[in-house]
Length: 371
Length: 152
Picture 1 (cartoon, each protein chain N blue to C red):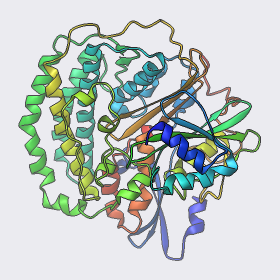
Picture 2: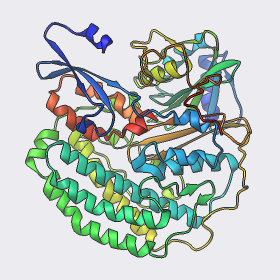
Picture 3: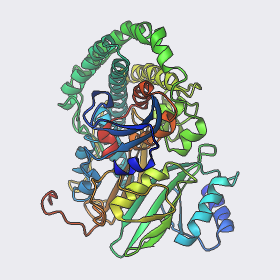
Picture 4: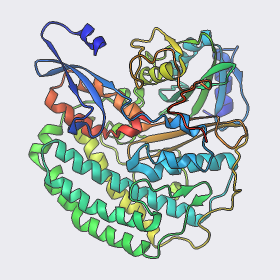
């Protein structure tokens, strides 16, 4: 607080938003300098949910540390686990069975839909519409049930392990996923009718939070935030992992550079995820769901980096190994951390009321930022 | 650009740079004093155009600290890793926040977690840790917190 006071001029007002403010969706603390209603500066104060997952991982084995990462971006738990599993497999040079690869991609895409559903509901709620939240949770709940059956958990699944997945699919998995896709296709038009085409909603989103493509890259943004500025950044397309190079799906790009463009990218991405699931759900190969690995994993001396596309953007896992059973150093390059850093840039000069719309379209998940 | 071409171009820009073999990407080691000039060249050279700094971190090797920068080009899709060795007792390196804006936040994180002093950084203060943590760097290997740290 003291530093902010030093920068203010006469007539400026400093307000705190968070860390217990409902619009920040978690424990984000913003110190906002206002002149009238115009934002002069937004200063995020982080650390309210910092658990030092990087330090913790240094004393956990290569099988154990994956479980902690579910607690980073808890809406993309599968994809976090996936990144870690891929990184360890890269070091061990393990071949993952085809069945496990397909299961992993299916789970990733279901997670992506669930995450975007929650974002969509919360986004509309931020702007004052409560109904979409219930619509979104109606569909999201069916995904959570599918997860619960197969993985045993609804949010922190811990389902992906080095070499494959923890256990085989539940016998009902295929039927339930097909039911979900039918439900989703029946309901998706409601999203557009209720929110996307709504003139009040569009007026609050269009032209708000302008982020130029150059800034998006320079600030290290990734995921739908960059794609809303027309920058190709989908890791699944650019640096394909698992079986993404064999699948048919489009990278959704919008060129509006504003909050509405970022909104559209996420809504359209859900449709692409459904497309991927449809290609795979009837073609899950038979066979093992886990490669045979040693009980105690030891990575060779060296460095391994793996990036994946989570629902929020590019997650990087950087492992430095000294040849032991625990990593010497782990760095998680979380998408939310970089996406948050751009908030001051896009919010300065806007009105306070628009800040919530901008934060909403950055899709901030605070445990992912703090780690 | 392929890895071999990248190596040749970087050697041209900075003959003192050494390369580490192995790994999927070009791995360059430079002196802290040379790093800022090389970083500007990597960003501004039209044939290289490293415009995306996707990871910035530090590793504590007990005898020294190593800054690790992962760079990528959204135009050419080539990647590289730059490492800068720092003195553990007085770690200092130039900030990159004027070249890649994302460095500003990441450097603040490294500053508090490892105690690296980034010269000419516009706003170098604690980001995640609460006030009063200056001087104790949690991600250094010799950091001890008998109350909150659980050893397995």
